[in-house]
Image (cartoon, rainbow, N blue to C red; front, side):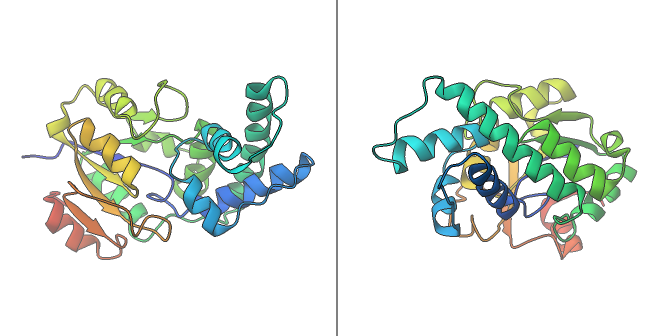
Length: 234
């Protein structure tokens, strides 16, 4: 099989972003007069749910017994998440969250070799742009033929919808592509779309179930080893 495209998840895959997200949520909560505090252990549990707004709702429904929701709860969550995004994109813009080892080189190598690149993530377009503009430059979008992110599809990972959307945009079959993910929800999404998937773990996902992965790596610091394992012609 000749690999025609690589589809990247973002959070935890391109960069170790989850601690930045967690700290940004906590800043938004404090600014909103809420006494909520997400520590590492709690956030690890909340990562069971993908999507920031969905994660807030999951926290309220499953961890805040007795909490009385505001009358317009959806609007409350939307505003809270928007405030969190401001803090997070500021953190990214200041360069506090670099790409993971090997990622930038992989993107540059694949781009030069004519392999199509795409993004498939549940994070917002603002978050993706803030991360990649700092790490890849102002022309970062030139690297990617499709940018599947945020609320483009109604069902987020582990549903395969975002991957189906990306495949349609690329005009490619699943068999032409490989995906890079970091979590169980992510690989369930990509495999359900029929895409061969490699995993790079992080501290939040290391113990998760990656059944079906074509390969599991700590990171891409041994890029040549990854190229050999994946069959990438690089």
